[in-house]
Amino acid sequence: GAGVSQSPRYKVAKRGQDVALRCDPISGHVSLFWYQQALGQGPEFLTYFQNEAQLDKSGLPSDRFFAERPEGSVSTLKIQRTQQEDSAVYLCASSLSGVATNEKLFFGSGTQLSVL
Amino acid sequence: AQSVSQHNHHVILSEAASLELGCNYSYGGTVNLFWYVQYPGQHLQLLLKYFSGDPLVKGIKGFEAEFIKSKFSFNLRKPSVQWSDTAEYFCALRSGGYNKLIFGAGTRLAVHP
Image (cartoon, rainbow over the protein chains, first blue to last red):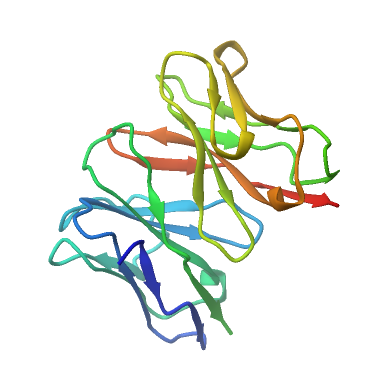
């Protein structure tokens, strides 16, 4: 596709349910990021993949959050036993290179998660 | 710890007014700074970026930003806003050896015709 694709666009979960959010980065992009954007806030870093390797997961708020990118392309962010404070927009971004360069990140439109 | 602060959370302007959005950062090393924009219903897009060299950087749609190292600032400016500039604007700092970004809380700009 032409851009970063995320699905579903909206997800409503009951507290305690598990959810899985999908990200399809731009084909060939090495780097993939997950961000969490709470209402009225800027995106906050969750985790980073370089190909299939998860190099940084320092932003994951708890062990209920788990991300994977097994084949170095599609990534899934899983949240177990969802809580109301998990309600946010989850953004995925990708970039061509695996190192800090003069290139930009391409963001998806996000998945809006509402936990009731 | 690295952080980005945006002072104005909401800005309301009339068309043709000048715009300046404040951004201050906290980081002790070499900085790469960005402004991203999110138009209603759309994804985040890069507006402009500073890596090195000329501290006055120009971006798309007539926006520019000035990096002032002594003030730890990277304010966004536009001499004459349009209704279509209504959006949320995020300042960001790159941290680490890859393209991890630290974002400010954002500024919502509403331009009235």
